[in-house]
Length: 213
View 1 (cartoon, rainbow, N blue to C red):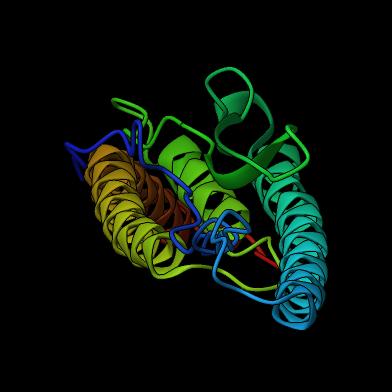
View 2: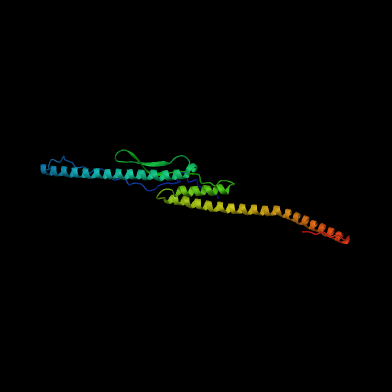
């Protein structure tokens, strides 16, 4: 079975990403001369409250990005570990910069070889099973992972069919090669019994009897 797609560069990928928190802090101007001191104090208090809320949002965003980064890296590590020698290089990641200035992985992929082993259905079957195991290795496989697993299942089914065909052909060859031997054996056995019968007849005519056990 030929799977044309090498699942590259979208072999095993995580598609969801943490949403960035929007916006800059509202700006409150203190340059209006017509405002009273009390109004200015009230505005400063409101500004301080808004700034504090934005800081909390940024902290929450960083926390979500950290969680996402761990999740993505564990996901791709599971793919790569199970794929073994089928993996083409290491995992690659897409990143998002957080409010703290750091980069966090929010998506990833591992490219693997998915072509059958030419002329060796048994090896193709083993490879298909390994591909399927690698696709479903993470705790939460993505839709792309499940699609790769389905392709591997089809590849395995075709490999089993090829193996069955090879086995039937081998049996037929064995049967064909033993038939001449059987015929030759039957002819020799018939000739042997004919010789025994002729000898017995001759001995009987001469008054000698052979006891054949």
